[in-house]
Image 1 (tube, one colour):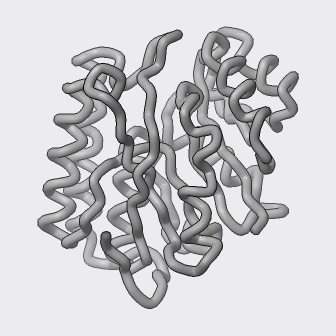
Image 2 (tube, rainbow, N blue to C red; image 1 turned 90 degrees about the vertical axis):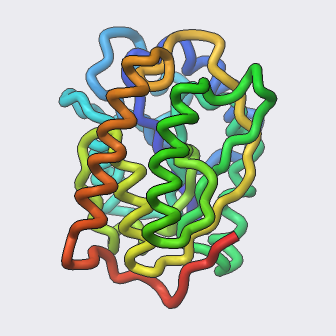
Length: 240
């Protein structure tokens, strides 16, 4: 199965060498890094590591993802993995997400982050995550335990969802549209380590988590209220 890895990044020059070192030990597929208006050497480091670099100067997590997807359309992969620049534990775990897709068991696989209490997702980020997931479970009955950015999706499914969120509602929109379209969605436990260099734009502070949580909840409300289901979908939804 042809696979590409998409890394949205802004000012991640401190973290990227460690990420690419971890990726270098694996059988890594095509890597696309989207430089989302960095003021440091993010693009240079990625290019030196053999990654294709795409530029999206307009700030926005979703915008960065959309720019990366657009760059892949001329020769699309079979599946696309989304990976944050500070997720050093992801290396060695790609098959956990890709195997269900490759074996025809799922179309979207979301990495459910597991870690010791001291090294996992910060409490304020976990709280916002749980609120959104609880609402999603009530609306769609989906037993997915995380909204983690480390995820893999079949390319044809990705295109059918017609994602257009430009901010941190990107992953909420992806999950909601996939569930509404009765796409086969699964969660898969993945190891997670809290970043030790640089600072997260979202979970690194309480205000950042609150802003991101508000955007995610707003996106959930907007998507749930849509009358027209977006996405062609596949035959059924798998739950854990």
